[in-house]
Amino acid sequence: MKQLEAQQLHRRLQQGEPPLLLDVREDWEFAIASIEDSRHIPMNNIPDRLDELDPGQETVVICHHGMRSEQVAHYLEQNGFSDVSNLSGGIDSWAREVDNSVPVY
Image 1: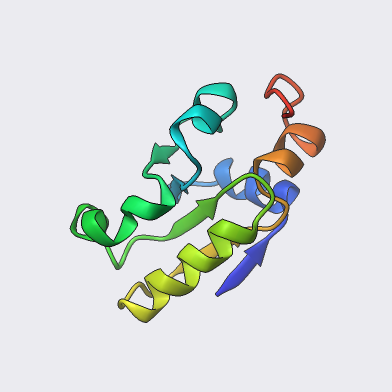
Image 2: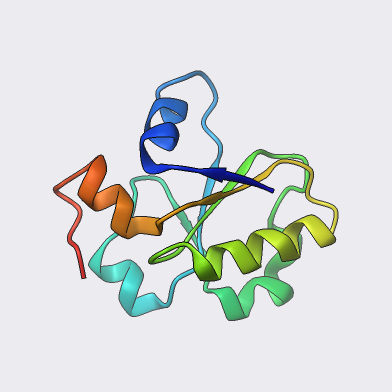
């Protein structure tokens, strides 16, 4: 599993076909702050909704600080996902380093 810093993801989103941004935070967290075009599936729902995701699609997993998303990224890899990255520092780093319009909480 790759680790992406916020600035690296920002550059990646500006190139060609964007990856799936999979936000695994709780509903209330996603309502406060998110990256545009993110797909929201809370961490605890991932096992039941795994069939909604494409194992061959480049996927960047996002949470608040990068710990839950790292666990989900490992889970995805163990279930056959071939191109998974974790957003190191999570939405917090994104808000502080890339998009200051995203609230910090």
